[in-house]
Length: 266
Image 1 (cartoon, one colour):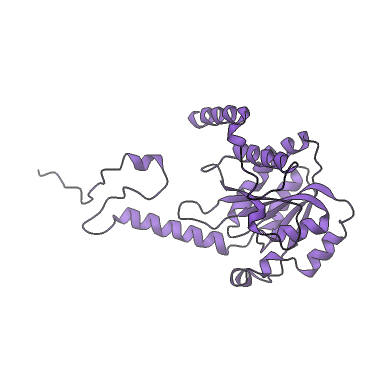
Image 2 (cartoon, helix red, strand yellow; image 1 turned 45 degrees about the vertical axis):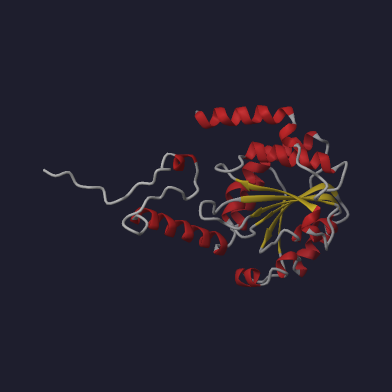
């Protein structure tokens, strides 16, 4: 009996595809992609669209954070809907009136660090990653002797929303944990943006960014270490293009990497 021939022509780089989530070495069926790869692409595209359009479940996230002992305040931007948020980036950068009044009531307390957790362009990211990241980050922040304000859950928010919120709250710096624009292999990537002396009108050049925070990207312990390192450095100089991330040169970084490698093997 003649052996059935495989209709898929495998790519010579198929061994490398096991080392990355990038779409390489997909093979071909005739002049087209194999059906399995077409279906995988369609699924990834649907997941990316869902990440952008699905509203953040702020109540569920607030409940998880409250269970960890945090005080949570729910705020939103001036964008009245998800559709308006996507079409009007400017509205996502400023608070609505009710949120502004809510924060003004807290303004006399001040804090060293104000943390905002925002939906951004992927509501999945903060829902999945904010709480476990904070469990790694906040002990490091408290070891520095810094005060942390209430956690702000910000809906329909852009990064710059933290500037106005931080200014109102009298924060020395803000850390924005926000859902990043989803890719076709990362619909749940969380970005961290640190801004010293926040005030309305700050530019992105005055911030430091840590990207791709998620278990399949930059794991929580490493992301928390990087952010804590930058917070400590920002106490001595302003954030932005003048502040370079030197966390990888810290001896503790190698120990964290080794620990993550052991966990990955187990």
